[in-house]
Length: 95
Image (cartoon, rainbow, N blue to C red; front, side, top):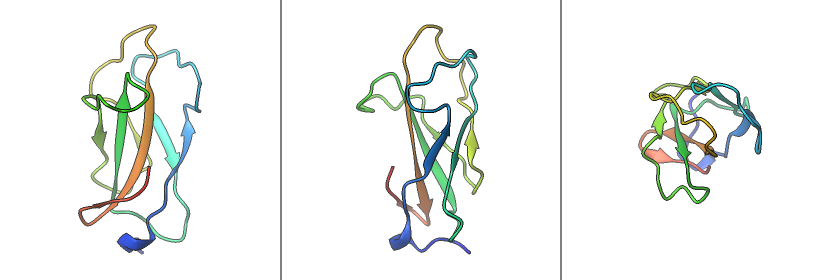
């Protein structure tokens, strides 16, 4: 069932793990969500800043899938941060 907006919780980041080094410029970001319900979609913030002040690389799934790839290749030897929030209707849940 679709998650009610007041029951949205933060997804768990699976891969790459926090602090991990990736060896590809086109990583697939994956996460998991508790099985109690399914969000309508997810917002993914991908940023070169740890405070997410620049979210120009961000995007969304548009559905309940739990993986996403950036549209553009990442820059080699650059540190990125990522986070995911569930969406139901137009409400963004916690990251």
